Image (cartoon, rainbow, N blue to C red; front, side, top):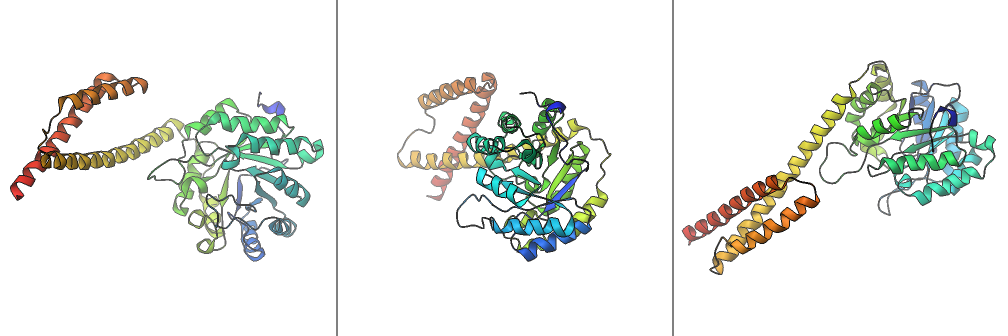
Length: 366
């Protein structure tokens, strides 16, 4: 399906909305209103707050549910801000439409499940065109770096008649130690924009960062890359937040950030992606060092076992089997066999040295 300007309507009508802000979760009427009033004073036009919170494990705070929609209606009435929340099912969407919510977004976990996206799309398709056009719909990237899944979710909604559509870049999950909570992988939203240039693209620096201190620099990077806007988590007292407290900033901090953001500065996206790649290389190298240390620890243990059982340190048959197996795997992974052979030779030589030194140390101590 072609996602172009002819198939889309302006996301916010006559308004130019750069910033959506609000708490990760609407936790109470008092917390919701205190945050909303401060954000309205800072000039925010769209208030975002989670009502239903999908948690990784049961037992955590999962949102206040339907009662929190009343608080969002009060925010809208008292401040004039539009209000937005996340939906993960057709039932959520129907409750939001009944409550007069102005915008909804599909979260990363939902977008990763085409069945869930289709259920929401079917609910939109069953509405009148006027009802569909009354709400803006934003689609976060899926948890994993799969641009086709992201575009597929957008296409499902477009096929259901949704015309006020946008995408949200919130980063991608990755394993192990990492600098950001979710890796930005800027090349993926860049590719999305290349393939769907008419689709508004917002950045969620809060979920990428995972730490409040990183939200500002990430927000500026997104603006430098000419994103259409930002969706930022703000809480009147982040330290007491019931979810994602580390990445939320105060309304006062957001006001300061808005004043310092430079929206007209043009970035060299190649430099940004290059820096991201370098950070990825550093992270992979850290993992390699840890793996090498673990491998040598096992090699020393093998040396102990061989010593205790009067076995030779070097066993040519085992080495040949290792080389044959790893070279076959190298071919599958499209790695240069000459490089892999050289790497394995050095690795084996060091493993043997570790075993011999362990054996010598053991003999000396004996």
